[in-house]
Structure formats: C-alpha cells, structure tokens
Length: 121
Image (cartoon, rainbow, N blue to C red; front, side, top):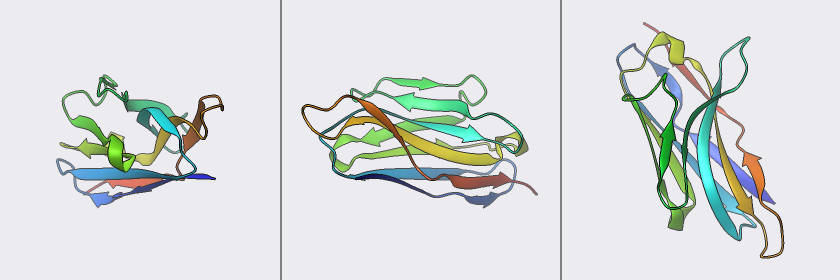
C-alpha cells in the first residue's frame, strides 16, 4: 500500500505565496520522478512541475519564474513553492510519484488526493 499525502493548500490573496508538501509513504522500494499537476474547475488536469531523483527539474511555462519544485529523497517528500500567485492558479493541486514497490515490480505512477489552492482577494 502506497500513500501520497499533500498539504499546504489554502486561500491566498493575489501576489501571495504558498508552499505545498507531498509525502510518499508505505511499501516503497524506489522513487524515480515526482511532480505536481493541477486541475481547475471544468478544465483538464495539467502539468505544473516535475523533478527527477537526481534533482533535474521541469516547470510549465505558465508558472516558470514563480513556482519552484524541490525534493528530499531521504524523506520521500516533494515541495512546490508558489510565489506571486494569480487568480488563474486556482485549482486542486495533485502530487505524483513514479515508484516501484519492490525490486521486481514495474514502475508505476501514484497520485495524492489533491489539495485546494484558491487565489482570490
């Protein structure tokens, strides 16, 4: 059993900041990439940022320069630092992790339950 639990969402004014956290726990042998997606009401889920096990990052153009992704491999944790937030950043944010549960298992993508971020004055 693997769980990804996000935290840190909430209501923030435009121009403000939030830091999302996601911790993976349970039967985990190895984690490769981790990342964040978001889904606004009536929209498809979209990529926000990703980070490899070696620390290489990829950030969507819509948040580049404002959002930063980081991770701690020893703690199976990934963060998303969000600065200069805009109303269009309002969405449910989901973390994911590509991991193996045993040495013999295949890589699979696991998802968290999501955390709401609302940017509004």
